[in-house]
Image 1 (cartoon, one colour):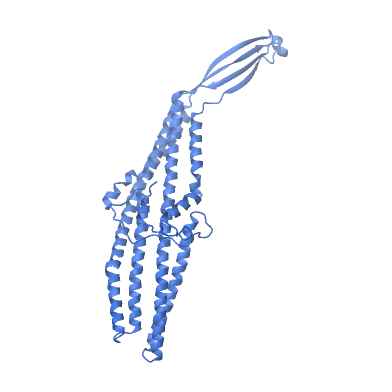
Image 2 (cartoon, rainbow, N blue to C red):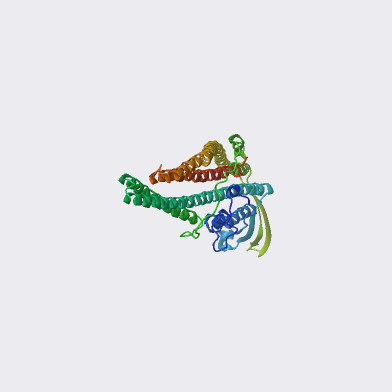
Length: 411
């Protein structure tokens, strides 16, 4: 099955060996499919649907009865001299239209529950994709933070050397020490965020501890997305709305069956043997019976089904309204993430790079100090960090949009 979010993450692990190959999104989703308890209920759901269909198609059970007439009495009927014993088999006549109505109810319910199961499966896939993106982003954050710790440490050592040569002031030493402490703290924070993200992802397939070392994906490519007006038109055709429609059909079928039961009674046939004690003879007995319909009970069941249908229809409409609002919000967040990413890439990073280049060129001439270089490096680190965070936010938001639509959101 094609999952649109797969196209967002360009996986580049093909050149690595099997032992070294990092976790890809496809790997993560395959593990979720195999390991998540809910997704292992697929076979049970299929068997449950088959059982409902079989139950709806089953004919009423036959009934065997044994009757004793004239067993006790007076005069000629005393001492069971006139006893008549009847062994009889009876069964309700199950008309084809009644059976078809039951099958319609079972089929509509199976459709609704199958759609609900598929919707839950898509939710798990979307959640796995979002957690996978968080792992990739946390890895990038940790690598960058460690690089910055190394730069801060190098700067602190340089300033300390200059201080011993009476070139740097005590304030410079304090500033670089502060920057090093902050960088170290940021690196520790990034490390525990990565550990938490890896554990959160692995928990989706039941692993007690993460069973992968790294996750690999390219988040730098941001796919274009269709306008909101185009996407919102697709909401009426989503599987979520199809599920509410199936629920409505199920309740409609229940109402029709209840009205059928209320309008028609139940016809039964019976046949058997009767033994007359007085003459020691046997006779064949045939009979027909008719159970009058319980109109009050049938109408009550029909009213209940109609109310359930109306509620399902209202819930579907409310869900559609909520989905529109959610889609609008997500589409806005997506646009903001793209602006943040492009601004960081096209303006912040080039400006910080130019600043750092100028500082590096001026250090030899004595126009700048190591603390100025550190400040420029902090600005460049912050700009790159914002780009990574914006890219991760963009992809995670796109996952949510495509889960909402159950289709690709590309233009």
